[in-house]
Amino acid sequence: MCSINGGREAIPLYECSLRLQPRIAVYQPLLRLYLQSEALPQAEETLAAADLYWAGEREHWPASQAALHDQQLRGLRLELWLARDDFVSADAWLDARHAELAEDDYCGLLTGYAQRLAERGRHAQAEDALRRGLWHYPDHTDLYQQHAELAELQGRLPQALALLNRALHLAGQQQKNDASVAPEDGQPRYSGLSGAGT
Image (cartoon, rainbow, N blue to C red):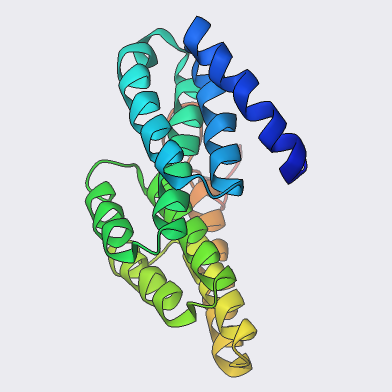
């Protein structure tokens, strides 16, 4: 990745590129560079322009690539709010995403947010975000793992071990459930013999 000075030199090039031909692949690195250089008003304007552009462009992309760009824009939005210390907006926006995102997308966003909060020393707030996620998705192993890392970081080893044990138990349960369904027809697999003489 570019150094901060290299990033500052790259900003005018990205800005020129967007003026000539807007592309989501240019908006995202420009947003990152603005955030790195703490040019928050420019980052906010660029995020609004990226949202507007992406709203009209998204349907023309393959689903997997569109999902990746969606995820990156959501992460950049959170980074902007964190850079502004606007935790109220970030929390409210995250709560609203629960209704529209799939479980893994929401939980991934939430664990990333908790990680960013912890990096800023806001451990209690990170823990609260993870608890809210576990309230919605009590069987999501990534939330337990992130919560365990946070507990360990704060020196609460017994809690970290309990959370990791819960994550391992859930992962084992999920593997059992996945193994009991045949992928080709969706019918349960039987572990015992079905009858004599076959």
